[in-house]
Amino acid sequence: AKATLSERICFYEVAMDEAARDRRKMASDLWSAIDRNELHLHYQVQKSVSTGEITGYEVLLRWEHPTRGNVPPADFISVAEECGAIVPIGEWVLREACKEAAGWAEKHKIAVNLSPVQIGHQDIAHLVHSVLFETGLEPWRLELEITESSIIVDKDRALLTLRQVKNLGVSIAIDDFGTGYSSLETLRSFPFDKIKLDRSFMNEVETSEQAKAIIRAILALGQSLSIPVLAEGVETDVQLGILLDEGCDEAQGYLLGRPMPMRSRKIAA
Ligand code: C2E
Ligand code: CA
Ligand code: CA
Ligand code: CA
Image (cartoon, rainbow, N blue to C red; front, side):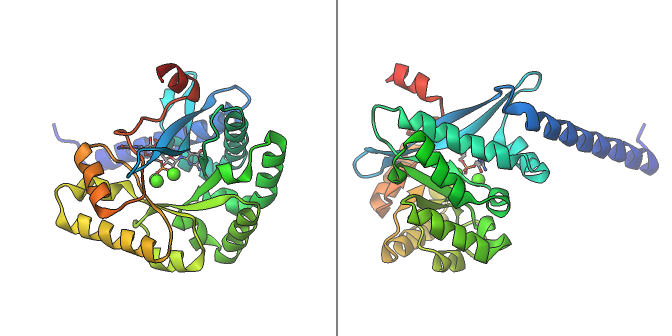
């Protein structure tokens, strides 16, 4: 039998309640995840489109929960941002990544994601400065990836932070570019070192002339501003071929390499 409207509303409320309780539970688990050694880092390779040379690795956080198993960042980053746990977690990611990379035989760059909440709640320039000092990682090997939302929340603070970080010799990439509603304004506000073209464009580039036209326009924009463009989410040879034809600088995606721990990458190589 069909549920009555009131039964359905009741069910909905119970489900909402459960979802809220689940997020609260996840939030409290996140606060102890660092101490319990549940967090670790994966690295995804970034390559030059024209030469295939490795240009760097993006650092991606992984959470191995004792009962939930592997929780994807899409499920826990927003919770961590809401409850504030992203501040110590983000600090852990930065320190751990710099420590690991400082020990690599080859001096590749690493790109660390920075949450808008971190920028709002701590002195990022001071943190980056101490972590570089502690780990001995050369500043040029560190890149911070920020999204437009970081700049929208508190523009003056964000721009000051970015300028201070850049003065340390660290580079700044604008992440998920093309998805925000003020992308051009964002580019005008700060001298970014790299534009990361959002994955959604790659999804459609093989089938949509429009997507291709937008990619072409963003590449032209990058070229005229002398900012290299990296295409995210490259999964096929056809996509890579298009990027080569269009003069895209760098690429990242499953075709070039899946995110994985550094150690297993070395064994595989
Ligand atoms: P993002 O910064 O855009 O990172 C790229 C995401 O795309 C990663 O998902 C990566 O695994 C995925 N990806 C890479 N290549 C491909 C591809 O060819 N096809 C498809 N379909 N996906 C691809 P992941 O690791 O699940 O991370 C999701 C998001 O979580 C990241 O998106 C980032 O916003 C956030 N995140 C991850 N680690 C951190 C971190 O340490 N700090 C902060 N603040 N956010 C993080
Ligand atoms: Ca990123
Ligand atoms: Ca991205
Ligand atoms: Ca994203």
